[in-house]
Length: 102
Length: 136
Image (tube, rainbow over all chains, first blue to last red; front, side, top):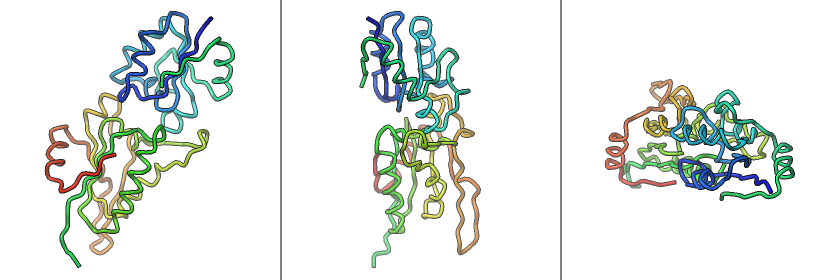
């Protein structure tokens, strides 16, 4: 059964993203939201880790949280899809389980 | 009435909106302005995200307090510092940050932008020079 992993913490402050990437198996989905959206931005110190993960995970970022923090879709790493709240619900419904990396 | 002016530094290390720290720090800075001290505001680590341009919180249903930063110059805050290494680690430059103007209403002295990006060594020096550091 597939898992939707969610990360809502900044990758610079907590190791939630790091652990998620370590344990999420190929083909899983990852949604970045709240302070987790900073991991989706281009040119950061964590971009290499996120780019590597794109080869094996489907990665999504919550648009409203990006917008709140002053970033447009052009600033995110290529291959990451922007979703809205309805998209968040769809991802939760499509995947059997949701694992929240708090 | 005491005329002793102390150097206060407000140190911001948290991103906005995910936690309440950034908003609380801003409240304290605005309240502190009433005490006529020598105030500086420092942004480092995820705190640099507080100053990004173009914040729009309509869709997350939270108060956008970003415009308040631009009024700090009116609250006797004349020094705002940002750690360069923190910006670089996040793929940001000074162009991504809001500009904060300052004006002395008596002398009409004006500074277009008081946001200053500085090296980490300077951050440490400024902390040493402060009488009190309020950490958020």
